[in-house]
Length: 268
Image (tube, rainbow, N blue to C red; front, side, top):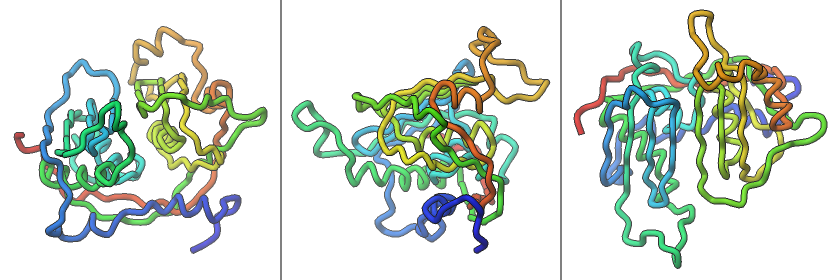
């Protein structure tokens, strides 16, 4: 593999997303699934996507396209998902999925990362295969990327004292509560249409709110919230002014997922 100037070995390893071999192999007898799962079309008046991981290993997602769901399930950016039907990135769905547990969290037994939570991605991948008849394969391509670094003057991120691990995304707005930088770079990648690599060295969980003028075509009007604040900066400036972070343009190998087949979900 050719070296990419300016990107260290650790950063390069982040470009090669680890897609478990089981994802592309035949299901086994120990196939991880949700105990109960509902998949339905989202309400037409929803604004933005909402994702919450539950302590028992379940997940609640609203306002997500199938492209969003593939991105979440396989831990890749949306622009790393290609192919598939036209509705892949336009029709929105709500997913409510739970895992039966004999030891539910209580005040005396607070929620913590468990083996069940670590299986959430695998369960979601299997759910997409079952409900959407999803089939895909990986390919590697050389693509432009961004490195996220701390700007001159230092980070303005605030370390969180909460444990809710929530992120809300809307047109020109991103609000995180007790989330790591991984969730920020995922959303930046989706907004910019290019992989973003975390090179900040910041390993904590943070509370932040980022507001910018959304990237759009001339035919796409601003969302109401952004239209009410016409002086919002473009996203590169917003990152520096509001979070104390900066994006650097680079090139590197990026693993992409090619959709071979997808169908609208079966009834619950």
